[in-house]
Length: 206
Image (cartoon, rainbow, N blue to C red):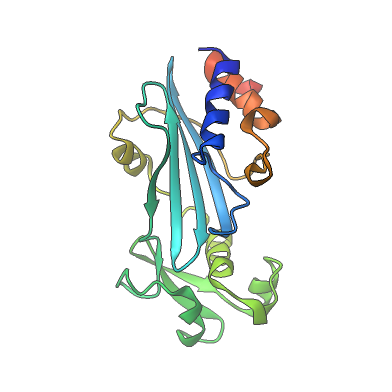
């Protein structure tokens, strides 16, 4: 496979609504991550797209060599809760919990302390009176950035494929606006990512 063929495959996924859409009004974005696992010619690319609708959700997309089905593989919805009960996941109720500025939130079942003071809220460019679920997830990410991602073991268990070494990951990249017709092949990031995968040369990635 060439990098052009890989881009064509990602473009087909995008046209079939099976590629991450960061500008998705139905799944307001809080944070996201892309991770490349590779060993020689074998590779797997995971996207974790975290947002909030009725609860915090991590949509997992997977692509790779030898995959029968690529695209959205799972919506992980036991991400954040206000107690040890994972169904206690309506985050806007946070204002009724804890002290004025600090609350405990459970991220994948583990308690973490989150600062919800006006200063913390303003740091994510949200007015305190406009706090919503998606904003709370962003606060968690800003203060506990590793708490929202699945482990490599969890990701590869979802895809039922052999775990490969992690070679690259980022939470910021140039992503096409799928909703308005842009495709991965229009993005310099994905052009260079495809080249990096095919040539096994991470220095290609821009």
